[in-house]
Length: 309
Image (cartoon, rainbow, N blue to C red; front, side, top):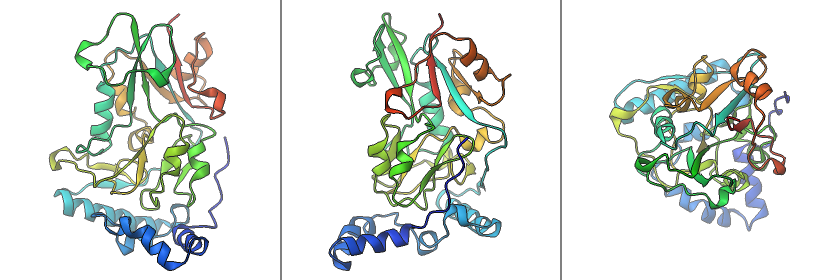
């Protein structure tokens, strides 16, 4: 396992100050920030000035979690349970997906949206399900707009794609304020309060796994999931990035991701690769066919695809 990155020397405020020097001064900076200032969901001073996640004490985090709960209660009329779930010792999560069993029903897509408080209008989806003809793995030409009522179709197979939780994540390297990083259990996370919305991570990701909130996310009050995590499924705001985080609010409590639980064919397998008796360890030892998407790029995904052979 890689050791955690040290606390960065540059934070959002120092980044913005440096940006001002590198441009034509404060006037240029103000002009560049004008679209953010016009957002209906611009961060409050309290949120903007909070400490970096890795610098926060337990007391600091408790104050932040209370602020988030207060905000959710004011907006949605219910009091959520917001926690900061830490990585479990001796755990490195991987995902295995059996392409022979996947029928392209997209139940995983919608379970993910419901569990993780993703915007419904416009709807943000972390999982894309690609339809490919047998014998082809050209995902750039795959169809992800097929009619789900027609599946499964003869002559095709289906490949769900989401964040691959890379061991060498290019998205982390390009973030100028360290708002995204890889945790010890292999999950790459985003601090929505620290994200400045530059979208560098979105451009760097070869899997199109990150989503940007161009507008203020909209979630019906009756559909809010009140079991929330700071680095996971708490409501996001306009102007920040988000992505799959392996349902951190579930998996760090010993549960399965929502996408796995809803799969009607058992195509999805998830677990701790460091445990030799885990199902994912058995799959990686015994199956003969493995596919890691775009492995030639050196990202080393923790998401494995295989067929029954």
